[in-house]
Length: 133
Image (cartoon, rainbow, N blue to C red; front, side, top):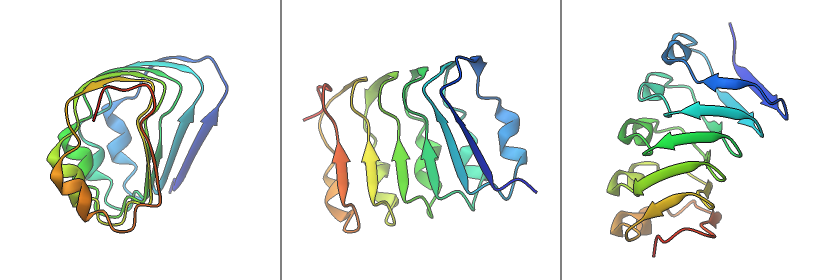
């Protein structure tokens, strides 16, 4: 079984396949510094053991899928340096174990949801160069 995927600093183009959800024991997903484009798969919530998602410095587009906020064990969500747009969902408050959240250098807009105040375990938040306020 695969529990960790960590691929950094390779300029591999493509997308994250939805078949990633078949890796049911995946806990750690780090794809950093590459050319992966397309949308973040909307079925990552099927990975119920997932605790760490780092998809920074890619070419991801679209919105942050609402379903990612169903991954209740998630403690790290790092999506900085992409081309993500839209607003930050109020469902962010469902990630009650979140300790690290980074979304800077994207095209996100809107206001920080009130539910953000319930993230009592959040120790680090980075939102530089976004228009989220």
